Length: 280
Image (cartoon, rainbow, N blue to C red; front, side, top):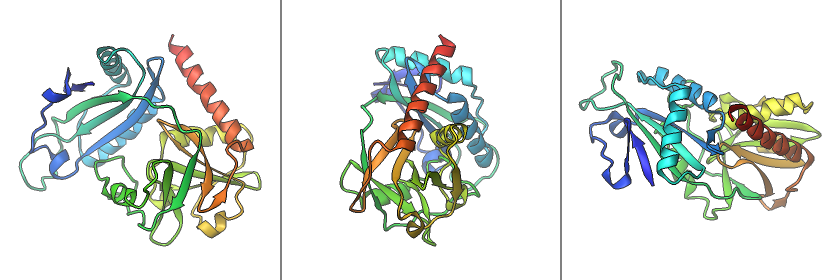
């Protein structure tokens, strides 16, 4: 697959990044992953807003716009054959000498990667992770290059169909390895809040908005696994796989077609169609 790097579409083998880029030396970089539907990058404005927040925290001066990202996606998609894809927009701080210089990064490296979409799983299994969710570098977790906590925890999950679920150091539910997590109990939708160190997912925002608009009570907070016992449904969300039910969690079976999941999945898919139609 070709990639977009600092304004040029090039072959993967021709891509070059300096070893003095602070994204490599110190993890000073942020990224967003999203997918296209008939060429349209879904919820791209929300992804850019989260990315710009990370830039502010890191002192990265990157001039990205929604229109510009759409153009990048369109050009790369066409160069790679025109199919919809999984996209990763990565912005690294750029080249600077060795040392912790806090001044702004004015020449960041911007890269857009594409890979083929695979059908989302019909269901997932889940397990609690032994490794705890680390605390964010700043008050709110950024979608940054600091990902070793996730990679280290991934070693605990040997089955690719299983999602590991993080707990915080004090034992409350946080998030999945690559997802936000939800459960339904007595008709109420529960999900961890930002104080658990989880990433505020773009799809999560949509899921909660759809739930509230659809009359489903929502509770965000700090919940222990014991407080979640007796749940009727569990499911996950992320921008690539959308909303996926958990059908087996620590030896207990759950429905793959629970009423809350089914309602939210249907409404989410309707939203993707509306977003696409609005630009055609």
